[in-house]
Image (cartoon, rainbow, N blue to C red):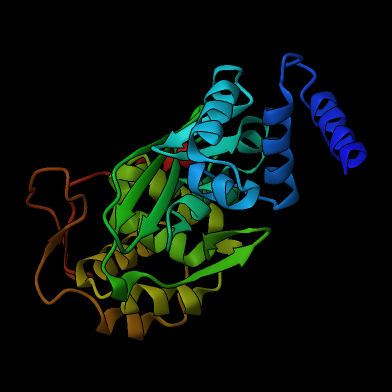
Length: 270
């Protein structure tokens, strides 16, 4: 038992070569985190796994935090600093449950934009405020339960399908660089998209204004949609503004019932 424990300590100290002052207690805590593959952990988990009292655990975690070995994400929630850099998507969806990666973060992940998105954006049916995770900030959009769909689990984290990431982004273009950036992402994604799924998700989302904007932008970008009739049936019954963040104009698109209050710069997309 003592020999095994000393081997664990030695491995942990070697694993944290930049932190040579790690104590045996701290190394044991780290061994539990790695052995149980804990992406996020706190005092409660460590008390349960170690059998130690809360004060001993708290002191060990506080010391690891000062040394930069672990990073505090929120009250009594920590992650290994090294793990955070490598597994921020996994940690984000573990920390905020239920949730999935979406919006500009997902569009960047899929290669639909060249923009480097610093925030990790999540969709969740519950209210959460922004959460800082080391060098990363988690930005959370709250959707009602009927709009919480169109995602998959892959490589340990949950992420929107490409088609759903686009629908989410069109619903909240302010979180995705604006309408011009969305149009660029839509055009870049088009070749590989499942257009039937895109239309299905747009209609299922339950926002007729979004359907009208999607149809208008598809026409503007000269993107062919075979399921056009279904999209037309789902459009708004009254005129809606193309860009909700801009003022009204006198230019209208009657096919999609859109007030064209923003000019999308097609030249910059080439």
